[in-house]
Amino acid sequence: MLNRSIEKSFTVNEANKIRKRIEKNEIDALQEYFTSQKDEISNTVIVKVNLCRAVIEHVDNFKKFTNNLLNPNIEHYILDFSETMFLDSTFLGSIIFLLKRINANGGVLSLVINLEKITILFQINSLSKILKIYPSLAEATAII
Image (tube, rainbow, N blue to C red; front, side, top):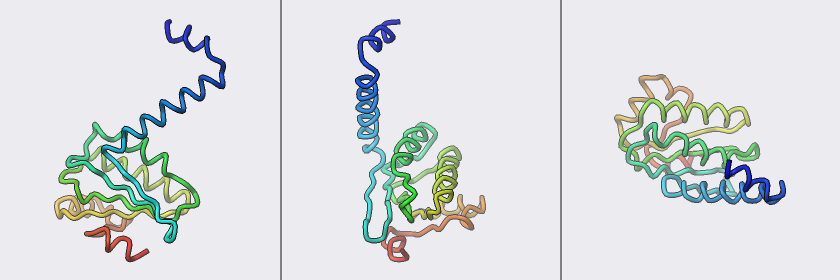
């Protein structure tokens, strides 16, 4: 009830500005786990996943972070999992969800995975047929 009375004291425009600031702060806080950089020349966005264990607890944050990067004008996205030692099935599902969104915009998603047991996870699930997997970021960016 207190929140509604506070909201009523702001105009709609002021409330929207406050919401946007809160959302921006949430995204800024996510940079502890995920960072991104855009290469204007190759029209590529690289997302570095700074998680040792990419598990269910991080899926919502991963989705929020990557949703802010989606752009129909970007051709290539690279997810860099070189720091990741473990990836669970829920996080794997979030990668597939992202892949579908990127493909819908005509983009391509590639992964950097330098740990064989994670690469095998993608092979067992036949995901290596629909995702390009590279052992290093240098190799992933050299192809583009």
